[in-house]
Length: 127
Image 1 (cartoon, helix red, strand yellow):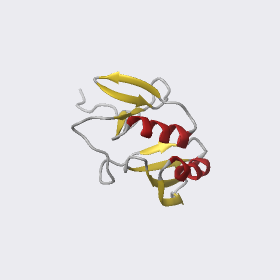
Image 2 (cartoon, rainbow, N blue to C red):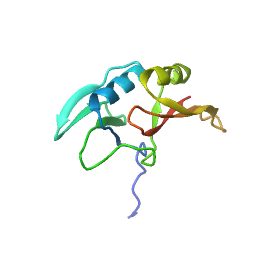
Image 3 (cartoon, rainbow, N blue to C red):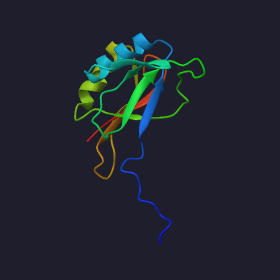
Image 4 (spheres, rainbow, N blue to C red):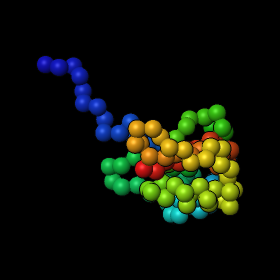
């Protein structure tokens, strides 16, 4: 009998992006990604990114015990082939491009990095 378990399908199961102003952050990400986030309250107010059943989900969340900032966890949002369009929307949404579109060697697509409306350093990715 083996003591090993199968590797998970994805390394990320859920993510949370901290925010100081949930309305401002929700507007920023809805503008950036061209989609609507679903507002919920599960103890803390949050706005959930759309995702397929079984896929990786995530949310914007405002918590008194956590603060947004550039030195926190780094995540990359999937731009579904629309990386150039997402990058172009960052300044108008209230963010700043920190690293322009960059090819990932080995055929893994492209990424860019930005600072969002809350001061978080967030990556954008697309094949």
